[in-house]
Structure formats: structure tokens, C-alpha cells
Image (cartoon, rainbow, N blue to C red; front, side, top):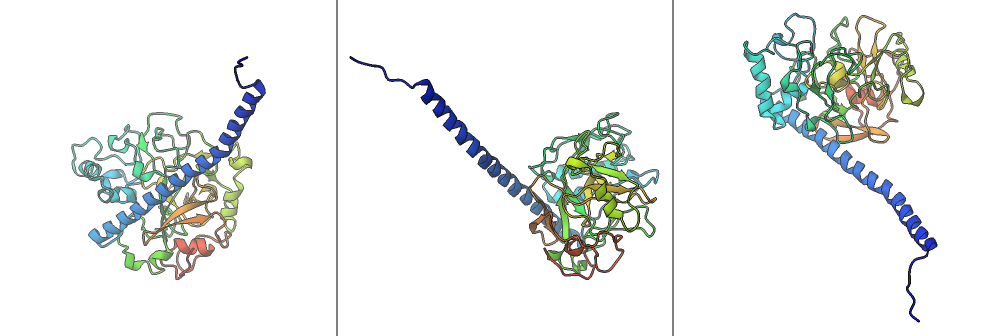
Length: 364
């Protein structure tokens, strides 16, 4: 007598369970492989920016500045931010057409944007700021197509159309001191790029190009986010002697800022603006620390270490165009010390790698 063979219900359930277990085992490996690919692309994009800076230096015999551009970009003299270093690099990252559009706005008095600050959204969205900038966004960061859309910089998305400016997750290093327009004396930055100036060449980086950080990365601010890794807290608890300890104390449980904290969500939200919160980091607090603006003085200095979506660290670009992964556990030295104006950095290896000519030759 002929019988038909078939799976029993128990056998079918066992097969399904085995398949489920295999998927559960393989999924983390697939995700890890994807993240490894994203990290490789992220580091390669940073390296391409380093090569672009070197090509700029070859063409102009100086490094590009930070917060540069014609006075028409700040027609009222209000201290509004002009161009970030990325605008100067456009011809060297194969974006000549966009560079020409910036040049046309700068030089043509009939252009409706000729006398509008690059960080001022009150006149509406500037069309050359809108297209997404893949070359300036790490693939691990979800913010590639996020647009700055709010005029009120304390709450992204709360009012108005704003700038519609594209984002960047790569940041210019100000070294072991912040860029500051209002400090007395004015702090021009201790990294390779000078605030409002382009008079520093690679030969002036006396600590060595392989020992000095040029750029790094930072998570782009999400609309309404309270995460300490992508937002900036406006803090009055940063008393002298406890400046950065006060900043670190602003972070609540779960890597979220306290519910009553006043937050700025402009980090990375305008790639072309030299507003420090948009396009700069410093090498004071260790990687993946909170970001703070010091409101305990009239300087409103901004302190932000690099942050990333990579586990346990961030990528840095050195001035020799090499890229290195830096652990969150890097030595930050003495965080009770104020930012130096000159001399050796008090912030350990991390601060020494930020200063271009602090008299240290430390390397990561």
C-alpha cells in the first residue's frame, strides 16, 4: 500500500524555529557589515576633504579661513556668520557650479541674495543652500536630507520657513579653544583654521601636520531632539574653574538633557555657515560628550567635542590628510582649566592634538 510522506506539525515548527534562530544569528553580522561599510565611506569622505584642503593650499599658498566672505554677507555689521571653510573648498571637491553660484551672489548687486547673511533666514530660503550635500555627510548619520527650516534657532521646526539649508556632519576644528567673536581678547581658534583670516599656511603648524586635528564629525541635530550627542545646551552653570564640568553635568539620565534645559538644535544644520554651532568642534571635552554654550559670560562661547553614530569613538582628519579613529577614552587632561590663548594645552593628548602650534608634539 502506497503512503504519502509529509512533514508533521512538530517537524514544521522545528524547521521554522531553526530558520528563526539562523536569522537572529545572522542579522547582527549583517548590521555589523553594513556599519563597517558606512564607517569606511565616512572615513574616506573625511580624507577627501583633507586632500581638498591640501589642493587649496597648493593653489593659494595658504589654508582657507573660517567665517570669511564679502561684507555684503553681513551688511549691517551685526556679527552674523559668513562662510564656513566648506564654501572655499567647493572647487576642490568637484562642485564648481555651486562655487560659481556663491560667487555670483557675492559679486552681482542685482542678485536678491547679494546683501543677505548666509545664516539669516528672515529673507526666506536661499536656493543655493537647499540641495543636499552627500560629500559632507557621514553615511552613518541619518541627517543627509534634513533641512534647517526654522528661523528661531532655539527650537528647530517651531516657526517660519527659515533657511532650508542642507546639513553637514563634518566639522572644522577650532583646536583646544573655541572660535569666539565676542571674547576679550578675541579668540581666533588654536587649530589650523583662523577665524576671519586665511593667513595660516601648513608650514605654520609647528606641532606637525600629523599631530594636529583639522576636522572631525558631529551628529546632525534632529528636530525636537534632547539627545546630548546632537544638541547644544545653553548653560549658565559653567562657572570659571568648573567650565566643562558644568557642561557635562547638564546631561541627564539616558543621554538626554534635563527637561528644563534650553537647547539649540543648529548643530550641522547649515553647511555653508561659519556659525560655530553649525560647523565647528573643539578638542577640549572628550569625544561623544555633551555640547554647551557658555551663558555665564558675555562671550557665549560654544564648546562641542566630536560625536558620531560609530560605537565608542569618532573619526578625526589630521592636517596631513590622514584619518584616524579616536576612542571616547582619549586623555582629556585637566577639564577645570580655562581654554588657553597660547602655550601647551591643559587638555592632555586630546587638547595637544587640537592645537596647531602649542609647543606639543603628542600624537594619538
